[in-house]
Image 1 (cartoon, one colour):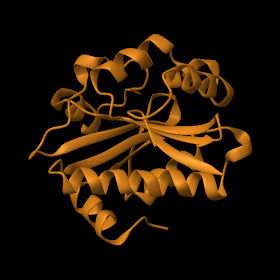
Image 2 (cartoon, rainbow, N blue to C red):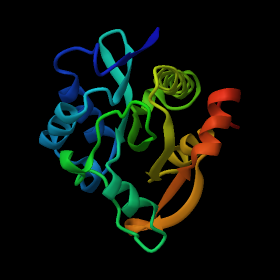
Image 3 (tube, rainbow, N blue to C red):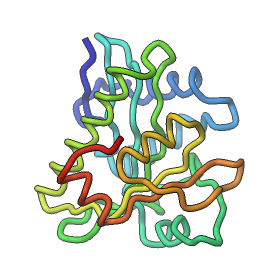
Image 4 (spheres, rainbow, N blue to C red):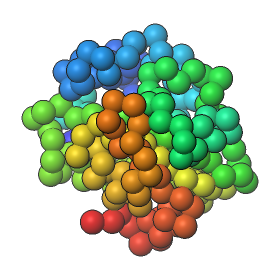
Length: 192
């Protein structure tokens, strides 16, 4: 049976497990480095949803609250830089109470045996619940964005109201859900 945990209540070694999933799912050029996972987690630990099948990490979702400068860069239609593992902790923001929090989905990864069906539904539903809880606690979501490297990633972003904005380096597709779209999803549920 699949269960979802946050990075706050996950096993101590969960970042090593995340990195192992990355190496199975992504090409080497997109795997990043374990060190970068650790330093971003230390900067803002409330940024992971982890899907477990017993003791096995079946997949995860990593998202980051963006600092103002990085948010401006990512939403600039003329900027086509692919930002991923190179995002430094200084470019992130802590969760801001009473202010809009702009989130970037860094990664949605599922081991091949768990793709589609129940696993992606549970991850999406858990993320929606997480966002609703943040809103209710006074941390409004101003926008949600991400760069999709696959059709599955693009579909995940679309379910949260993401609309294609631009192509970024590598031919990846950047999607953005603005506040209005986020409000619709929070009120009515996931799209598609």
